[in-house]
Image 1: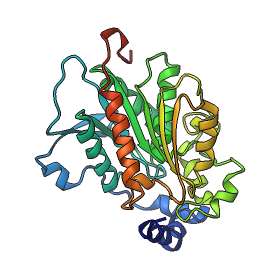
Image 2: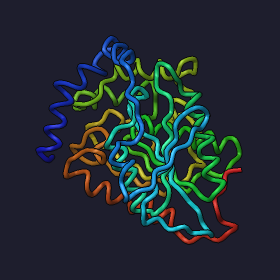
Image 3: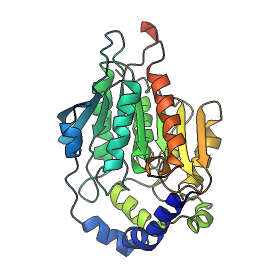
Image 4: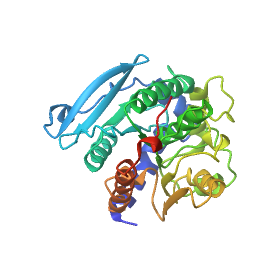
Length: 310
């Protein structure tokens, strides 16, 4: 484990976790805090390297980032949808935008970034509806690929399951970074892993999850996609550290889906969403996930093989 990973883990254990997820009380106080404005950083908006556009979808902001080197390919206008994490409480952060830009550069495709409403003012059903609309609109132009981290990765999987149940063609694939797969964190293996996780804690996360789910039961796949249909999903590329309490459910997902349909990366000593962190361990993970998305969205496809949502 690098000293950078150790330093971030120490900060999380001593500062971040006690303020946020250590207890239901700390989580409730965190839920009451004013939300940040969200949206892209000013440097991105002013950058000549990227084209940034904005739309309002179902009443929520949705941004699209295009690399200046993005090529318009008339025969295949595929795109990527990125869903940010933050325990359904926190707005999108600079690290998310950096990864979005990296995806736009690597794929030379538009990357759509929907800013779904956060708890406690908003809930899971609203987010699933928003993502369904965003995915549907993007798919009218061509095949889509879905990526997300943490709670956003859980939303990515839940939205994909919902699209499939509705009878539409699934995305080309999914990249999931430390996905939150069970809103109630009921996996018995979590208790042991939680002792090593310096960043997340079960009591506060459960409270955030309860508020986010609102009236949905914890077994509903819209908040706990681990309980949804898994047999007909597109290929999954998953990244998680073994000091992340979400790793227990990630292992369960891996074993339930089967090795032929999931590429599973579990990094020893890594903490939550390590590919987004400024640590040496993140570099090979980012390279692998960017390469995977690039290869998938740019793979040759015949007209009758395209993935379109109806």
